[in-house]
Length: 336
Image (cartoon, rainbow, N blue to C red):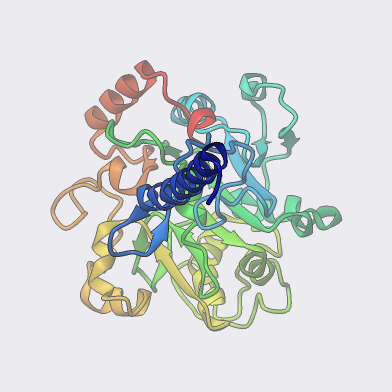
């Protein structure tokens, strides 16, 4: 028989062991979500803000280039001023191209990711941007591109959307299958994305800049002859050359087996079958005219950027401009 002291030591050790086992089982049960067989960690961990966002929502990994083409005009200057206030950001490189006589370059802030190019007013917007991209193979330094001009005003987002980055909205729609994205489609004289804003990647830009492909999609229209070149691989000498090239650039992309996409809601009429299907069933005429968007006008919130040089609902665009300029939200806060 054990001495009394030894007996109580054994009892105490047994109680302690039982208590430890019970506590371990109880702790495990606290961290288990019924039905999932999953032990969660009951510890609050602060999110790691250094982690990069997924590529699906932000293209900060592939270098991005945004080209903005400007020629002096009253509306163009107001559009530029608005864009510098609301559209400029630090998640891409920007090149502002000033064509011809203008002092508007002085409006552009001096920033590490912003470059200003002054040039003679020739080749029109697409030809001028193509010239700059081709020089020293500049375009090969980037993976994603946006080309735009000063005929549009934006970005515009409704007040309930305070997180979207305008450039991501366009570039997120560029995929393995889709290589040209814009705001609107015009079916006259043939299906094409209107050129005031295009988004693409290195594959799409390579197609647009390839001189060997420039004659590969022949089509005669009011602005060009059958074998006139299209794309960004040459200087557009006349306005007709520029329009013919704008129209044919969509054909260049689709001829290589890729699709296109636009933001305008009416493009849903294509039922996912592409621009050709849309133009079979949709409105054939240019919709960027007063009252021409299926009997109404396209809204800036639909396309983010608005063609402001055609007197389409000028009161709306003026009011939206004033209201948005009163907001402290800009692309520096939403584009990361």
